[in-house]
Length: 367
Image (tube, rainbow, N blue to C red):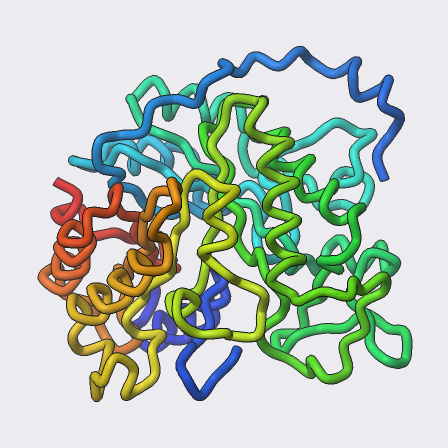
């Protein structure tokens, strides 16, 4: 995934939709078979209690495409200091990284792919002593909505609503969508993943939202709808011996971004909250900083201060997503990645995860 510098910048810009990322600031807002058939599936081999978390989580994000490359997972696991992998189970393109049973909706709509064997990936991670997180994108889903219009957010003319990138979104009010998303998380849990992390667990943040139609819309604030989904997902997944977590926007602790993310409410139902505190994603003037991206340590510190205050009284752990890339030429210096990590440590987070859309990470900061 390396190329010329110009191509790399374009690639990174295009990939910024990954992990639910959007530029944020005060001026920008943001059916399966029968139950009997399901009981006939393989017995759950998961322990009743989740696998112990590392003392300090030090992990990286891995796309399903990267996970499909022979030997690539081993390369990550061999990184000095790394103890956690976060791997796409269901991504923002609506694809599932491994094959699910033929009778599942994921197989029937063409979402379930053969990028990797979930069971073998989990076994490999655990053999190296790593903790394994499965990322499940909740509601952005162009695959499901292209086949099942009845599960999609629609437009006023009855067609599938799409965001600015042309991607369809499933309807957060529809319990059938909830079951679909959770069923994929359950499959990952049964195959050995230690934690199911929900991303895009929100309403759309961009696109012609004024034309969006939500069949079955509940008479409640969006934050209550997202909270109900997360509560349901946790109730279904925790009995399988996994932790449940959510990714949230970096300003959601103090700003109503118009997408239904209320970290304090979500923290009632999950084990970990992962704020995406990428310094390059904050507008000029946020935290009274002229250029938040140029002072990444300060930006992360201010963001985590707000999340610490928002989560007072909640048992959910706080683990930030940190930025290991640059929107300009070249890579962000290791010292600037380290500054973000030190900010996370000052606010006593349980660790950190690094994101680089190309999957290339600064190994020295993990040591």
